[in-house]
Length: 128
Image (cartoon, rainbow, N blue to C red; front, top):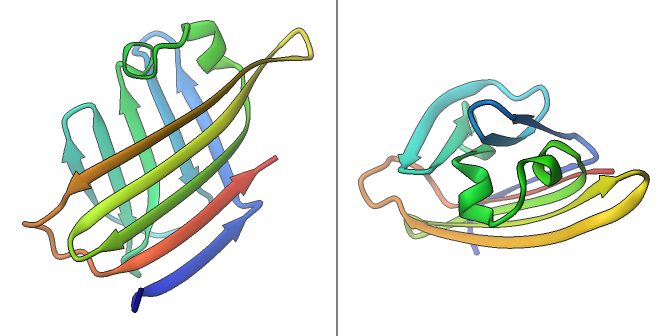
């Protein structure tokens, strides 16, 4: 891959809007530029052209998890790659309930961004 790389390990944060069933993963302290809308997924891009956030609408249905599990996400790993106008996002997270691991979830999203002006890049982000 010829694009640029952003290492944001330890700089991530997540939140869950229980009422509206929206799960958010993002990298802290990045300057927002634009969003790419893919229906239930919205990808945020910063001013340097890196994917720095992912919003998942109707998250409990899309991920097939309870809202309680999504409310208690404690750790996650977010990897995003843009290569030849194709966005690939790998999302891994763990949810806790009563201090026990309730769910280890993995999800991959691949979307065609052919009409966007996004450049090749790669992002690795975690929170623990």
